[in-house]
Amino acid sequence: MSDEAYRNPYTPSPGGSTPPDGTTPHEGKGELWGFFWLAIANTGIIAVAGVVTWWFVH
Image 1 (spheres, rainbow, N blue to C red):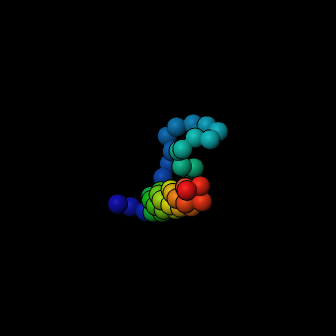
Image 2 (image 1 turned 120 degrees about the vertical axis):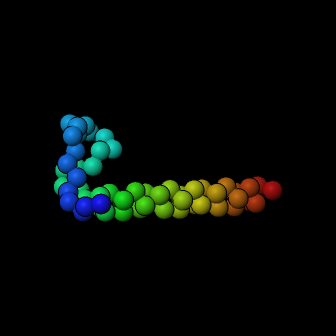
Image 3 (image 1 turned 90 degrees about the vertical axis):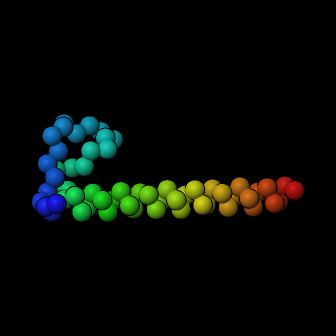
């Protein structure tokens, strides 16, 4: 797989999920992994907050 810049064939829209022109595949994958780990961390934070709240209530 080449590491040349990805050229988006679609017109960008506000808040769209398409990568901007000039994003390499390596950068795109890195951002996806970053969002993945952020989602895992957020889920963990919410779970811990729920368990702590449940513990205080009971």
